Structure formats: structure tokens, C-alpha cells
Length: 512
Image 1 (spheres, rainbow, N blue to C red):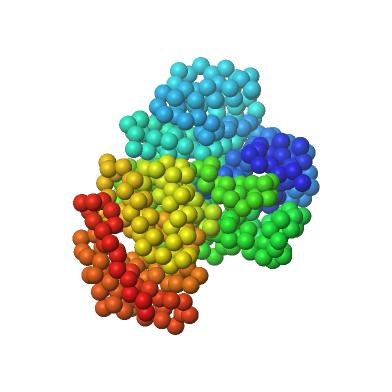
Image 2: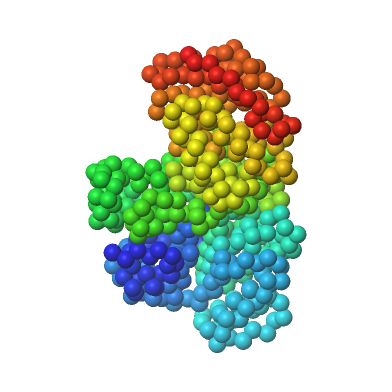
């Protein structure tokens, strides 16, 4: 079995006999029931392959689809002129770069169809190209856009953003006026920004991002995993010294969990699965290719408490279009794949990390960037913290934490209790133990509950109060009551932060 790791072109996958998960039944349903679509999915989720599949389908390459579901339908594989733009190909750090790319891409496409474009501007040339293609072929034009939002995401909080949005609006304003010349339009992206004119003006655009029928259009289902990767699963099981069911459970824990509709089955990240079966080692593959610097910057600038990422409830409108200048962390993290639908109740959604891979790698990135220690800079601290907890050596644990905080550069402001709590939460997650933040009780919320093999630590943090006051709050509000039936040792910890010293001021414990 050949895995198409990093290969995003449908013809190459089919011609070179790489593994292909047949999504053409869903594709047939799309092309026969509508015309203008938008799909939001995280990066490395198969959007580019989907666009390439549309390109081959409307290009009339019937032989590439032999044996696939669509070949057994009444689809006639008529050839249409295709315009495909791939915005993931460049960084677009200026509006001029974006204009230049569009201008050059349109000229290249025109050249393939022996058309000469004469209009002076990129948006006028797009109008000219679509019109001439329709006139020349007698067939309406298929318009495909991959990662439309890449120019925006590359320039968040940068001066170029406003002008880049203007360029995009001018371009898409032309697109929405060409409906009579267009056969099919499919646009992919990570985020949906309402005031980009493709959304604000194209009234016939159908957003299928949270459509139950198409939740498996990108991603790998459990059935596809077990059917298509059968031999690889058995090989991995041997290497892991696990039986098949235990291996499937571990794969699911690491890479499954993406939910795009509250009634849908969760799906796997395809890039992570292909990487797993190529290397036969569990690791954070997807996150390593898409480190969310702009997300971390957003969380820091909003002084957002990490525990709230999975605590707040959202309605469906909250998942809809955001503006770059007014982004809220949770909807953006849902769209980018760092959070997914965790639960649903009467119109309200609560988000959660999709799997172990994302939770672990995201918190590692939080520690690296909040502490400004750089990639891998926290590894030694995590190892020492874990060793201390395993021995219930709280003095050693907090001594290591003090060294960690002491190494944070002075120009990073730790003025908010939430900043400390977020670092604590991220560090505890990296330890590999069960960690819960803002745990609800009948009389308040516990800052943090950390569970090891032998102990349950109930922790309250205070920035402007003493460790004794933190412990007293735990006792008065009876935070430990729900844990008293556990066979594990319950330990109450009050922790104070010294704002002047920019470090932990001390801790106090009480064993129950």
C-alpha cells in the first residue's frame, strides 16, 4: 500500500496507485444538487485534494474515476473550462503580492486555453477570462478556490491586512457578477470572514461546513480506517505489543475526535493517520505542520484563560463568520481544528480538544510561547516536574516551578492571575496526567484538579491573596467533597503568586 503523504493532486494519486478514500458519492451529490459552495476545514484535512478531484472531474478525465462510486452513476463526464486558484502557494505579505499572484495565475490559465487577456487590472482580467472561456467553449466555467483565506490569516495584526481585504473584495465582487457564465463554484478555507464579498454578496452560496450530509467529505471515518488500513493496523499492533482492539482505541485517542455536526460521527485527521502508518510511531504530526502562532498571539492579547476554551457555551451563530479585527478565540479554534464540538444541548455547543495529539501539542506550544523559552525549552522542566509528582515530592515540584517562572524574560508581563493559571494548566497537561480546570461544584469552581496514579490534588491559585486564603476557600466551599470516595489520597493545595517577584510565593497543603 502506497500512502499519499503530502500528495494533494488527484491524478497523481490515481495514476501512481496511491491509496484513495472514495469520496465521489458525496461529490456526485454536491454537483447534482447545487452550484456555489463553501467548505471550511482545518489545514491538512484534504481540502486541496478535494479541489483537485473537482478539477479532474470537470476536466472530463473519466479514466481517473474508473471503479469509483461516481463511475456507477449517470454522470456524463462532460468537459468544462476550469479556473483554479490556490492561495496556499504564497505568503502574500503585501497587497501587491496578492494582486501579482492573481494576475499571473489568470494569464497562465488563459494561455492554456489559447486566450489573450487585454484588460489592465487583475479583477477586470478575471471577468474577461470567464466570459471568453464561456464564449470559446460554449460551456459554462468551473471556478475553484483553495484556501481563499490564506492572505488574511498570514497578515493578522499586520498593517497590510486592510489593503489585502480590499484586493480580495474587489476580486470576489467580480466573481459574484458572473453567475450566468459559471457552471460550478467551490471555495475552501479555514475561516469564514463575512465582509469578504464572496460571502456578503454571493446570495446563492451554500456553506456546507456544518452540514450533516457532508461531514465526512474531508477526513477519515472509522469504517474507512478499518477497511483501508487493515494490514497497517495489524503491523502497528505488533510493534506496540497490543491486540487489534487496543490498537484501534489508541489510534482513536490520538487522532480521532473531529466533529463538524452535533449528530455526526467524528472523523480522523487524514494527515496524521497517513503519517502514523508511514512511520508506525505515535506522534503529533498535524500540529507540527501548522503551529498556530496567530492563535497563541490572539489568546495572549485577549488575556484569555485557557480553561475557558472548553467551558463556555456557544450557539450556532457563534461559529459563523468572524472578522480579522474582531476574532474571538473559540470560534477560530473550532474552524482551525484545535477545538471541536464536545457536547450539544438544546441549541448550545460546548467545545473540547478533539484528541490527544492536538491537546498535547497545543499546550506544549502555549508553554513555549507564553514563557518565551522557544521550541523544546520546557522539556527538562516537564521531566523534573513529573518525577517530583510521581514521588509526591511537593517541595521538589514547586522548587522546579519557581526555576521555570524565574527563567521567563522580564519583559513578558505576568500581571494577570489568568496568565499564571494558563501556564499552570498547560504545564500540567504536558505531564501526562488528568488535569481539569475550572471544575464546577455546587458552591463554585475549583481552579484546577490534577489526578495522578496515587493522588488527587485540588488546587486554588491566588495572585493578590495568600496561600492560606486559597486553602481556606477550598475548605469553606467543600471543593473536595466530590472526591472523598476515591481510593486515591486527596491533597488540598493553596498556591499564591508574588506579583513583585513574578513567581510563586509559596504553597500550603492539607491532606484528607
